[in-house]
Amino acid sequence: MIILILIILARNLVFKMENQLQIELLNKWKDNSLIKFTNLINKDYNRICVINPYESNIDNDENSNEINQMNSYLKKISYVGDEKNWAFVMSIDNNIELFEFNRGEIDIFSSISNSKIKLPDNFLPNKCVNSKSGFLYLFENEKRKYIILGEVK
Image 1: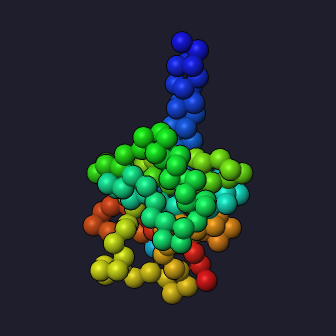
Image 2: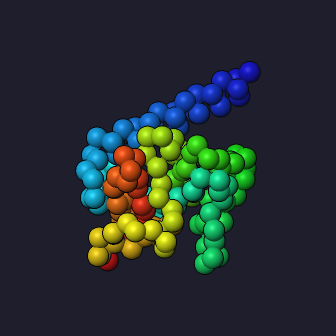
């Protein structure tokens, strides 16, 4: 019984943090703008990755130990992506944190290669970034709010 209560309390804490991140994004929203990830959250994450809708893990083309650790965590919690949600997965001090977003509020834009979206010249989209160099590009398209994770070079 105590374990169940602790799990519920932990899930509520994660839910509040997710909501806080979404609220911060919406409060700082400005169409066609870049916002530094560390301006949203006061933590210095080692790595931040995006899990798009329908995805349940992070592609690990570079065979990164950090991404392997993230994927192990996602498997351990039985994370399954669906059409309604996307998520940030973040590592900090050998811990993994997951922040899910409802696509109705803010959506992740994942098909950049075949889109007509004009990105800032110095912005390089990437599925995983270091929090010190991580930025979000905020924009609206067809009355929906979208973000793209990337780095400014």
